[in-house]
Length: 308
Length: 316
Image 1: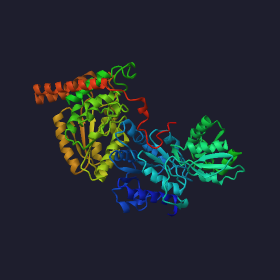
Image 2: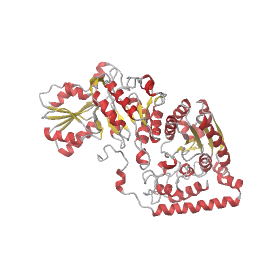
Image 3: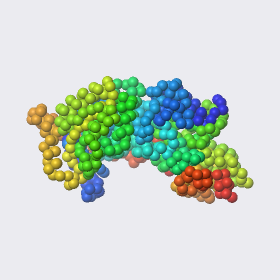
Image 4: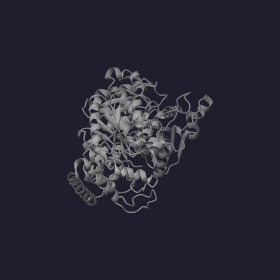
């Protein structure tokens, strides 16, 4: 279609879903003004304030109302600004959205997409810089998506809008300006992408660290896999790669301890019996000052060290 | 009201020895786990729901059997759910705390205090967006007024002028703590008024009074926007069925029993009609208990159904 930023790709994707499905609505703070990352730019003007609904700063009720809307036949997109703020809506995500279909015995469904951007956001300190994707991957009933490129942000958001179950859609807070070619092509949920082929070691990652991994200058031939969807995660693609390379390293920006990398590493070790490694952030909050913040970063150098 | 009373009594009986809480021991029983009874509060559910259409929505609380039955759900399938059987509304996946019958607009009881309020507001918002005629009756307890979603949901309904009747079913007790001792200011109705949601207080034990108040407010909800009904009643039983509620003052309980909503209604409608209604309710509940006892259990494989479609074959 065109060269687009990561934010523009999500905008074009959502607009396409809104044109295709009258039941798609947007709820959240500041969406009428385009959202703080401009990912909703002009949508209220185009589709009206009834479908692009400005809300008070009431995260619990933004999420809970979206559950009610979904049970009553709409397909809401829930704007939570950043994952850190969605913690005010954890009951509504975990106890309500994720459970409603199951505990009501399939009488109702919750086809919503909750946008909870993750990632270290420079200079934004401890309450705006978290990567909490593992929390949501842990909860039955949720699909968890982490797009790394403009193309995937277009295609995966469309897939999420069609999903029919609650999707925790986690863009990265520092990728909004990333540019790339975007085609109107379908990418199914749950399918990883081999970003670069290699034969010595499999590197599984997602979100921004896909790009960090590509910067690594290693003497080894590294096969890089962008997982794209964390739940369900693409075991087939990961296993096929590890069977070829015989080694796995999982890299993510989230705190390493109890991160989702542990799940992948453990599964691969259990099933294939190969050596596994993890690279994630130390278990510290993200500090404000640059030298402190840098300690929480997963850099190309740190990935390179773990490859040696 | 008589149907709800008969149901609650039968459920209480079937739950004996069900949870290892409040000093009771764990034993075999037809109803497992915590069972929150609305015995004594029947007039609120009945008086409000008599004014609802089948298409209207209801959201409920952990104490939701009465709302479910009053909205028109089958007693047999409600009891079947409490018994954990495949014939229950939720196919045994929800039990008492998550009882729901979407076919009559009953969008679910909820195990989390005040959690139904945002869902009610969202359902009402969907009604508005889709330009439908329905309204939502949102039941919650007096304990809910101290949770954040109470403020958020009322504010949301007010700014968007949504068709919601908020019903504070005030049974005076938040689990085992008197709500008054934990609530500052003038209480539920004053808090609603501060947000601009108008309403009234009613004797929640007088079903005729609840009916009249609800009728008036619901007509305003249909034409104007959210309204608030504060129905003051009393929880005859403990927090859960096996809670003897020894923490309550005996005189307070005795006063409440004198105001039994069924006895008040009996005075109004006469002994003969009351007895006929109660006998019918008893018959219905006996059939429901028998049907639930005879019903099949869910297949263990159903534990894996209706989790989610994407990745539906991936369990670990």
